[in-house]
Length: 440
Image 1 (cartoon, one colour):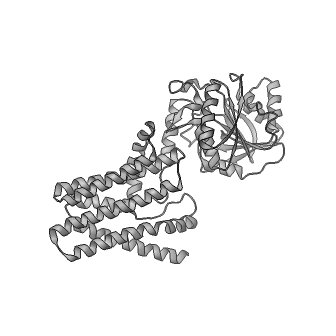
Image 2 (cartoon, one colour):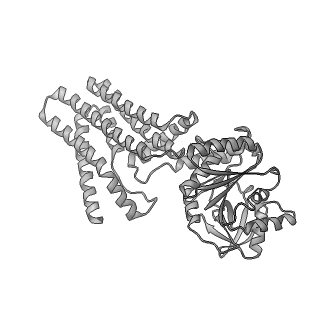
């Protein structure tokens, strides 16, 4: 399905950040890239982008982007960009003759909203608008600037920025038939150059329907406040349903702040992965050196590495750079760092104690940790199928192990650390076996 994206406006309220609104970078990715890449993840592949203000610069940028991402982009030029956005939509006349998705370049939207829309079907001559009924609860929206919609039984009765009677917001996400184009032309004849004018024409004919955005989100990035809202919202989506308790309440809130700053300097997530791994190894070396001070330094470095270990995935998701290899490499390096940290801690205790029981407990801690990681994928898959997408579930993993190491060495109890990890990880593995048996 074709996707038409409007990127012709000037965006003067964001001019302090960049001289072209679609190229404004939000967490490492320009607004226009973010829209296209979100649409790609939703299954769309053929893009038509309408440019206007500073259009040459935007088109050159998109040409480089399309080559780097192997993305099909057709340029449409709107020299009348000062007029309403309905004029930009009309630039697709004669080029798009089938149903298409219509998006705004300055709207940050959730993948789920697009996926739900692409799964819908519309009758010939209709349009389907994604709307947000959270007019009193959505703190991300500037009510004064938003386009309001009056909806009854999924039908649009009225639409506009200045209507007084409304119960939803226009999210700027549409599934359109080609009938939208002559509707906009009819609206132009009445002096209304806006896209909303064309929607209103179809609404008067009973041809404009709505789809609830439900759990999805959208943000019209128009000024510094909404830009900040978009940053906060995107960062808040980085938590995973498989996050353990330490990741949820300690690591992730810190890693998100680090990630935000790392994205501003455009560093590769791969370098962050390697840095976290090296930091873990250095922490293990301090355990080998012996002495309470070295224990504390090693524990602190291990915990910092555990926090930073979340940043590479966060950066990759925000920059749409997630690959199977990067995820696999991160998991492999985590196993090596876990083994080295626990071995070094065991060596520290054994060198002072000399008891064979220390070696046995260290062995159980390492094996339990490895099996905990080995069973994670299967367990996660079962829980996600059982609970449904987006539902959180209990999971004890690496975040808990490293935090136990950190707290234990602060209390100068390295052997107790190994014993607790050995017990908890093996009990957790047994629990997962029971869960998988009951749900397999």
